[in-house]
Image (cartoon, rainbow, N blue to C red; front, side):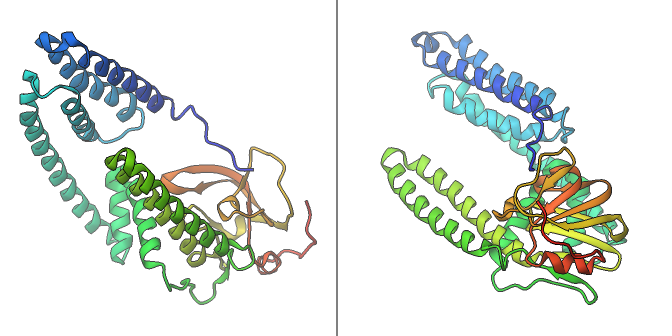
Length: 343
């Protein structure tokens, strides 16, 4: 079974989101009151709440618990500055000071980016001792210097790479490596094509309808729909270009760019065919769901291992259920007896 992550790790972020929504909603009510334009002190209070209180909450409830770089607060202040500019009427006195704050924020942002760029260059050069290619060294530098933000960036770069450059590509399999696809017998390509066609129609219809209500909202909805379309196309290419690999030393299970687990060959204790849904268990992870298919192979490992997911997501499991086009061939190649399908 595929288990939803615990909400405990998201509690600080959810708490910040709830408080931010309450503060912004309260400030919106205050700025729409008739008395607001008659009392300049209220405008100063709104500026203080949005530019000081909200970024402070972001620092203590998001940056510190998740160990984000302190420079992330610059982005939060920028978002609050734009929000303040939209809430305070143009005639109010504090509104005229906001461009000066924006200039200061822009200078701070450029300084942070310059410092981060220097650290990235140093990390990229240091990665040359281990990695040889440009992209592997760049990935290592981003992961080292940018932390959680780097993992999100790498996930987006992977998505764009498969969406734009995946057309006509072929899986890269080294000599002596057995590759096992997951898309030839599952009907996955047909589902991706159908999903892209349906999403394309929905994008056009929603965009045309939303333009009569709000052109700005229509453009944002178009961006969201196009992102979803690119993600679906990238997923289709990634499943085709990243098969599961089996070598004499290791097993590399890959499900597109969503999930990946690499373990030594000796850590694989059993590989048995299954049919139908698996019984729930805390040590079992179903990796076939991103393929819109039921698993047909269950891999059991000697000890719980970490399965790496999108955006740095990690799950721990001792048994992994996957879908392969030729599960019996994988079982034979892994050195286990071929047995009938079991439930």
